[in-house]
Image 1 (cartoon, chains in turn purple, orange):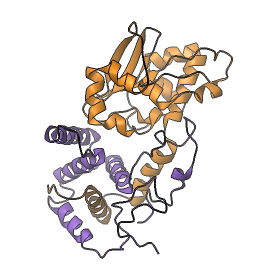
Image 2 (tube, rainbow over the protein chains, first blue to last red):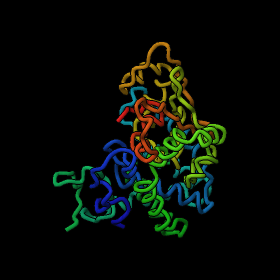
Image 3 (tube, helix red, strand yellow):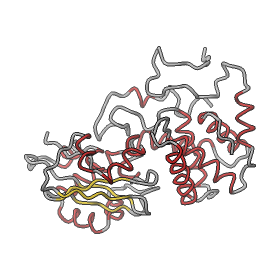
Image 4 (cartoon, each protein chain N blue to C red):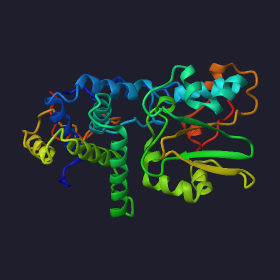
Amino acid sequence: MSGPGGHADPAYLLDTSGPAAPPRDNGELVFRAPWESKAFGLALALTEAGLIDWEDFRQALIGEISGWEAAHPSGEGWSYYDCWVRSLERVVSGKGLIGAGAVADKAARLAALPAGHDHLDAGHDHPGAGPDHPSAGHDHG
Amino acid sequence: MTTDIDPALRAEALASLLIERGLVDEGVMNNFIKTYEQSVGPMNGAKVVARAWTDPDYRERLLADGTGAIAELGFKGPQGEHIVVLENTPDVHHVVVCTLCSCYPWPVLGLPPSWYKDPSYRSRIVREPRAVLAEFGLELGEDVTIRVFDSSSEVRYMVLPLRPAGTEGLPEEDLAALVTRDAMVGVAQVAAP
């Protein structure tokens, strides 16, 4: 799964701006890392498949965001897609699609994979994928 | 739910589980990502604005039924079920926020920029809109009324900005090229070419 939102995506190479340009935010991409795009795509795919209800997800997201804000009055460390993926997990497990501890178990197994395994996108800085971007243990060679 | 999982790892674990169990089709997921990364964006809204500036009948339909008039140009989809268009005038300026999360009219503007989702914008634009707009570089006269619209219900708002002076002879296509995302959220105005 090296493809989705990966650095081979030509969109970030385009230098155009303004409304006729691909949907980028005045120089920043819609997603700042591949995991954000994955979290986004999952929510839409689950909704389209009728497995979750978008309004349930929105309510979970509102709860997650307000909880985060209450716990972090300074706003430091904010990650919108962190709230997004937590909400999605909550809704998906609430629907019984996965067990309560399934994500934690899976995450532990994924984290235990040897360095260089190209599954994890953590640490990638999507738009800045240049020669000096942090490679976080990746080995694409 | 365990709280100390790195978000990238959490997303990866969730994706793997859902795909392995056949609940999510990876192709469908990737198509959504590609669509919103590459195809759906503010250029759609810019076309709507340019049409409204040049066609008074369309402008009227747009203000009466945003979703319907926007669909006339082929733009529809998730988060576009109930779009209301707010028309700026020399006396009234509109600006849009979603105070609770990140509701936004995807079919015309694509996905929201980071600042729109930021806790600081979401709370401050309501409390001190004039100051926040000034930070965006938009200094409005004291005689201009600022109205802040909260998209947190089912309604998604889009701003119809003021047409800049000196653009009377421009064709629709050239007008669309002037319109920015920020102007359609209401944190900027459209500048003359």
